Amino acid sequence: MVQSTAAVFQNGILKPLEPLEGIPEDTVVRITVETPVSLTREETLAILRAVPVAEELASVIEAGRRKRK
Image (cartoon, rainbow, N blue to C red; front, side, top):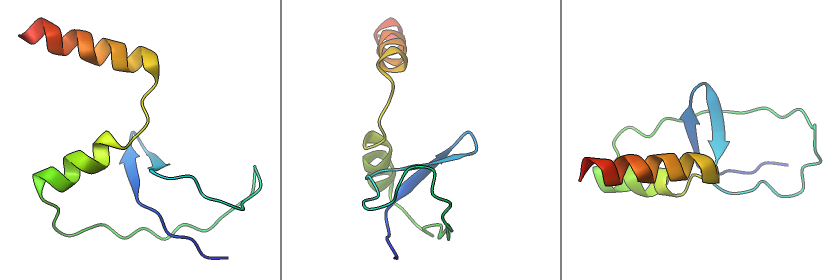
């Protein structure tokens, strides 16, 4: 089975932006990485916005944004 999805690479971990269907838990898979050559700032921000963030981390980030204003 072959599936494709976009992912973000953060802190040494690939985080898929969409769930992968039909793969049982703890299955070993092969990953091929293609790095987009040129993304606009808007495209990059759109990808990053799609990454799920833990509620606690989101609260800390939002508090930091408010503090800067």
